Length: 211
Length: 211
Image (tube, rainbow over all chains, first blue to last red; front, side):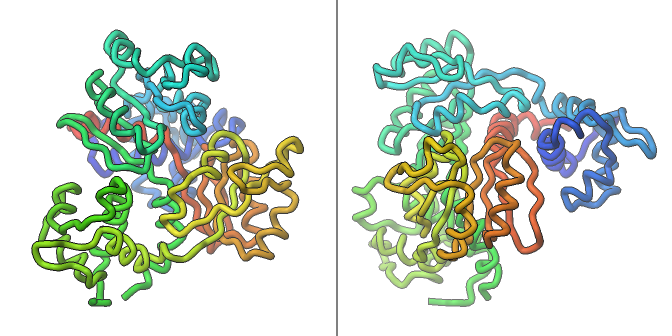
């Protein structure tokens, strides 16, 4: 295996990982060739073959890679084999979906706790995960060294929750609230704007045609 | 206004729109300068000034743009002023979140109906939107000329739902199921993979450091 991997290869590895983990279980237990992956993703097969060879030694001519082994190799390379704890604040529909999301585990994440300020929810569990009061967030994150948080509260509460998170040592924030968050240096925020995604998806042809 | 807009400008307009719509109402009723937008988004202010001048004539020196007017101008330019009907299949947490999402309207979308196969849900309403049986999807979409669908069913059902949608004339699909969908030519799919987003967000520094 060649550790001198290019940034181009690195940018494609998540695509391969995503495609391979999305295959039905029957195909995960078999083999898969670089050519098949290239075709499915619309990429050049020589490029895919080189990429895979640089991070996995499991490929054999005419047979391909054992699919599950390849998923493991890519995942380990990308750090998906770690188990990073994640907390979620806001137990509405999105928050519940996060606590019930099974695919996080494939990517090395474990949602360990949900937080809310509704006393009817605090003390209950969703999908086996405890729901705690927002006032306990800071102690909880410091004790468990949690660095990743997901914000699914209404937009009016998002900045306040964000401030609590960053004070508690959270460094990576995935934000579902439709509001721009201000964070201190060293904290990364990704705004998950589903409306914008839908707009780009459904209008991209028209936008591409504007002269 | 200059209609000969560059694709670079076009790619930045959604960023401006996203930022402006995320401002609190108190700021939406005032004015905003290109410089302020550039600072908030970490962009070059000359570039932002040019971009805005190409799609809005509301800017005045030292005052800036009336914020709500600028939002309207960008939105109209991007086609967000249309009202495109959207259907959602799968009334779990994500599906419910889609039916309750208020920010779709800003981007010119209206979720008109949810579909499920659970007879306890069919006939009910969520956020005032009717829930219909999945078997009614094709007739409904053809009658109302719906072209945009959101899939929030479990991964085992996603391809089947996708096939029903494309047969019904849906051309744009936002897919929350962690599975690769096969679609006919002319249909665009966006896979909303939150695990992957979180992985890229929380590991991008490490990935950037690999030599």
